[in-house]
Image (cartoon, rainbow, N blue to C red):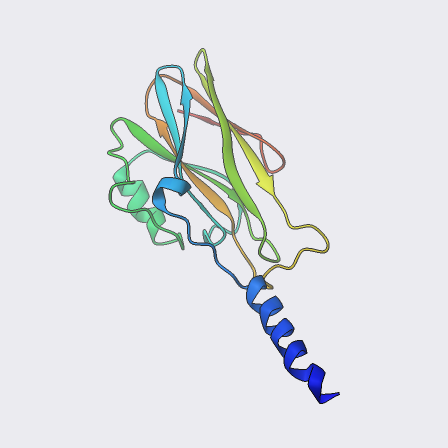
Length: 167
């Protein structure tokens, strides 16, 4: 019976450590651009610990708004990622509080037609047999959008989206 103890212990450690693994993603991998007519939309970050407990969309139009929101967010952008707010704004798409790890939201596509800028998002959730961290999470995605060329922002995808914001 003792001969199985070391291998069982190693297996247990491996399983536990895989459930708590955090994947480090470089800035180049994290930020991906989606081209739209005459504008650029860029997902700057996707985080499982955003800090926004309510689901929805926040449109950040100024440096002052960003600083105010920064005290609430549990994630941050590098100095290079923060836009000048004259030409680009930030959209924070939040899923709200979730019961475990494994939830995420990411930008799939962006389209502009007439005065509407549409961001299509995809949500991921863990499967019933997936091993995930047992901690409350607040997943969100931070997306840079052009500040001009549209009057309505539509964020579409699974619930809690679609959400619409006027400029």
